[in-house]
Image 1 (cartoon, rainbow, N blue to C red):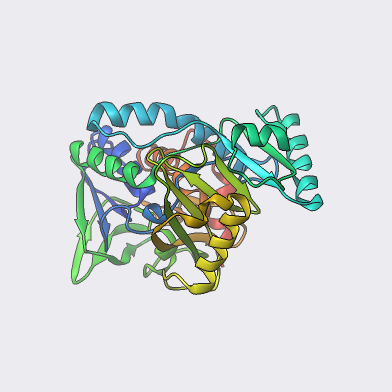
Image 2: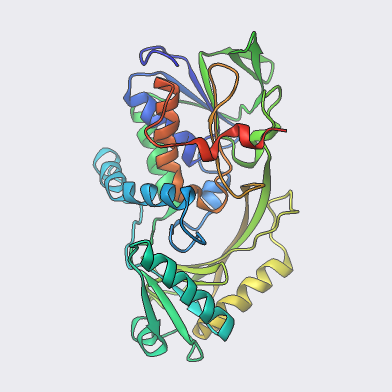
Length: 371
């Protein structure tokens, strides 16, 4: 716990979590320095699709769904704030998400999803094939059923991280880019600082928010079981919009942008260590996209890319305080970094400033995964 007026918080990682935390701390009068080997959003944040999908990404009620829903509710206010402070539009779109079923097994899964979400009081609507084609005429005629999630939205994650980084700078946050943190310096159970290259940086508190690389920082008191999970993506240039909603099938998706682009994603490759695209990965995504919207076949591929998401052993993020005083963690957000980032930044700032957060973080404690 530190006094808000002490200029001594270091954040390791300039993704959505690091930038969001920096904004919150700077708003409280704290001087903040963010360290990263690359520019803000160059890692998992920039490689994402920007889907804000609590209902599409969870299998049932629980603490993760609750956290997801709270995070989603923050977005309308965040979008307005960023527009007012930076003048930037971050591509926030609200048509909703549709889950699609093409066989009996997928139909049964959508029925189960509809049942538990209805019982939980969440907005959800079963769609017969005819209704799907009214909403999305380009979807293939063989679709059997859909599930509309009207409050699962999207944002352009590239525009979002640019706006967050600018907001942080406007509030006095300093970025040290090209300066990765090698290790933390701890003595007597207390954080003293960081080693950055050959330099020792003293600080009163530090947040480790380096995505899948968080566990590779030296001398951490805890074992952070965060592993890279490669996700390959395709961007298709369609001109006039072909689809309106985010379309999901079997954990893969089509994400339409306002300017007509369509993102196709994503692979989930737990053994990968390099952010590279592969023939098999991109080929599988193309086949997936054409199974849903055949009209995409004649459109140009604008680009392909891959990112490394921070996955965890139990699928839950790692959020909370280290056993070393002054050291905190916010990592392991896996596929939901864009959704969770702003809320996690707020909660991390609360932990650093006050020693407690306004949301129960016990299910996500770093000590649950310590070896």
